[in-house]
Amino acid sequence: MAGELFDRGGGERGGDYGWVAPTYNVAERGVDAFRLIAPDFARVMGRAPCRIEYQGWNKLGPTRIWFLSADNPDAIRGYGFQGLVIDEAASVPEEVWNYVLRPTLSQTLGWAVFVSTPKGRNWFYDMYQRGLDPAEKDYASFRFP
Image (tube, rainbow, N blue to C red; front, side, top):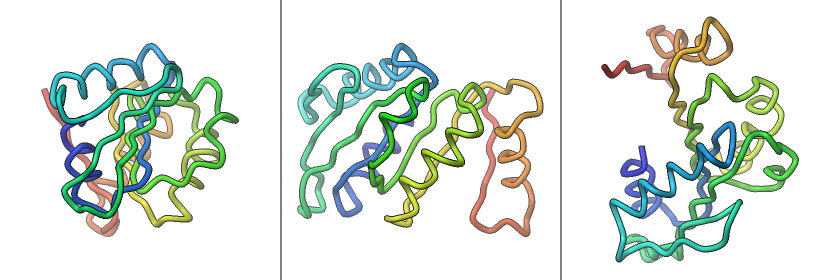
């Protein structure tokens, strides 16, 4: 997912993107992935929350990827993300998606990708089912071994 977010952020219009996980420890794995795929291209700045900043090939301004934790949802309010990865989404409370994360995409008409290990039949399961429904054109679901 780090590569996908890196490519989209650099190829779209720049701006802010988010990587949200249930805890900062899980979000830090996303930072580590970026360190591996772009060690000389992207700068890691700050700590909890940290961000990665780089100049995309779109030349429309810098791209910033914020690494945030869902265990403090009020700290996420106010962002306006072009795109969002929700890591271990099944462990993020549904209320955080509905009332905190989703509004960060509404103002930009941004996109979201949910990545997770299944955890019963919760809201993540419902989102996965929407992606299997051919009538839901804005959703897609995938399984990887």
